[in-house]
Length: 233
Image (cartoon, one colour):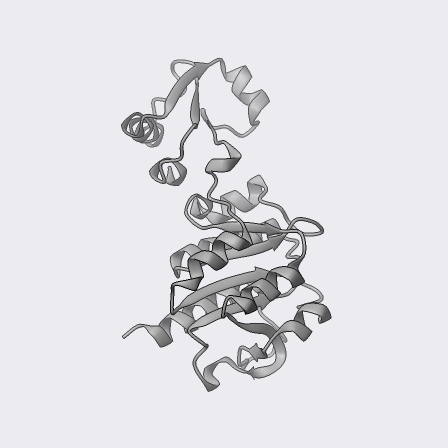
């Protein structure tokens, strides 16, 4: 539904045969597709199952160019004319549910983009898409071959680079810079040394309980909220 609301071009909505799409939610999706001028094709349920085993009566085919993904160059160009900006760089997040949850929060808090590596990390799998709850239809997700080069590009574009690290200064000590890029590390190893060395500053979330750390998607949401709280009156 969120993808349809984003009005992507070149999509096709495949519907299971008659009798399988009478529910109100599916009718709502079909009405949205018709309103947006999306092509609708009816197929036998067997064909839909070959396309996607968990289709639930519908499959939306989306061209890759309609996914809202764009390059670091485009992001930096868009940011050049802005005084504020918030970008998250995910340093090899492996759990697709964490990736999806971060993207969902990023859309909610108006993050400009999320940068992920092309290798050795969770791609935008079906599990990640489900956890994102449709946010990938709206939020630019940039796949970078080299995260250090991506961080350097952000720095050149005027972003202050923060690395999330337990040894860093407390997030609440002072507001984040207006143009901020936050590096979040792998669930087990944290931010890699090569990216931590590229950061302008390390920041941490104050902890008052007994466990040593937070889930990375929870940490991401806290950083996002703190950035917006400081900018919103």
